[in-house]
Image (cartoon, rainbow, N blue to C red; front, side, top):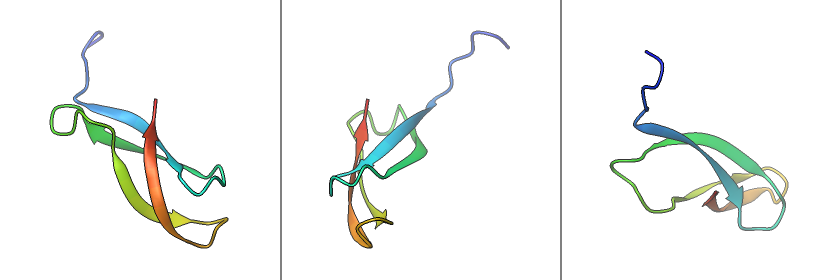
Length: 55
């Protein structure tokens, strides 16, 4: 099945705290076409912060 396009894309979420912490996850291109913002735990800042999708 070469050439098949997946509906779910791999994305990188980067911390808004400026620590450089990143998470890699997937999102549905069809359901959420906009950039994703998720509140997750930043290991360096030791608190929950917003993580924004980078391109």
